[in-house]
Length: 203
Image (cartoon, rainbow, N blue to C red; front, side):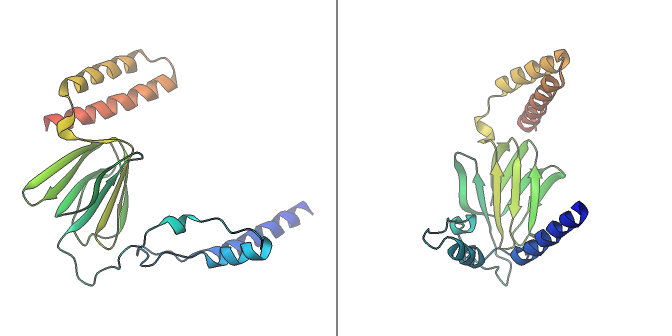
């Protein structure tokens, strides 16, 4: 009996998922999505209370994918508490993906890349601006818009090499003297970040 009940619930859950599933597409939405099915179900269930806003209500619509490749790449670099680059048109960026350095030009295929500690290079003509990123994700859209979301980021020229060397020595010492797995993990993260900082400053 319990087997049949669990199978019944799984079948209902699968059917509900199929009804509510949205079509997958790498194309950014041209217009803001409206969760009409959710709103209709809410009004039928609780007609005297306005339905809550869903995440799609706060999303700005993306421009349509151009028929030809644009000459510039639009870049956004955002942190949880700040925006370092907003809608800047550039020639190319190079991001520190976990799979290696990844160059992005206008017309790049839609991609999501996890970022490791390293340097984000923003190329605009002969000008190259570099930012050190601790970690994050890069979202490359089909309409030549690149959204870089980082936990921490700072212009490379604002980093003090002396403090980097000091931090690397301290975390290396902590790693060698760590006794627990938690201490080793924390020290290893510090070593990785400071090593990447040191490599970026000495490159």
